[in-house]
Length: 177
Image (cartoon, rainbow, N blue to C red; front, side, top):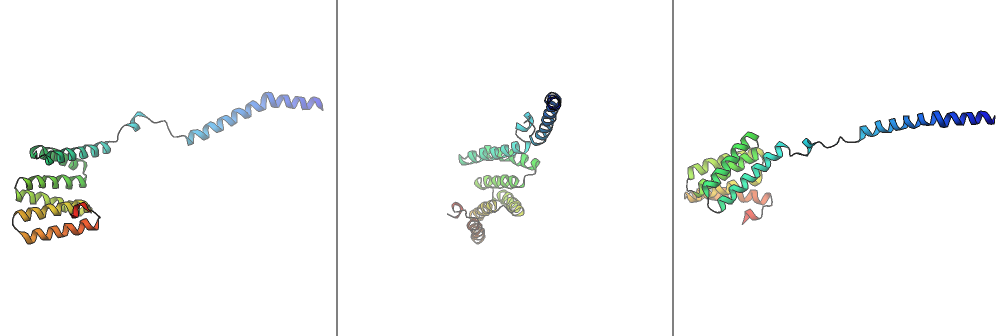
């Protein structure tokens, strides 16, 4: 009996145990292969095209604002026209509305009121269509300024009151002043 137990132990330790060990390793390897995410490729670390476009749109908008703020209107027009073209290619309605509104504000500053109104009303329609309240408030204010400069004070007041109502609704305290 002792010899048969020794024989069984020898067979188990030399044959069955290594086979079980390999089977368990294979099972664990397959299990963790399914659970482990694939290694990050260089492609997945690169910036997605949509993010690049948004970054470029934001950059062009900021560069246009900087030029506008220092009264460099030709540069502001150039940056915002570039941004508008890119936004149209990307079909980004929010930026399309923003750039069109910005172009309207340049024409407002240049005293070209009919062109300013055309741009601003296009921008307002886009912002209303997508429900972008902040953009609506800003554009309504600009349209009010155009009508004020044209001497149409009742229309100007109407647009400013509408803008104020929207700015209060969205909590834009800066735009209420």
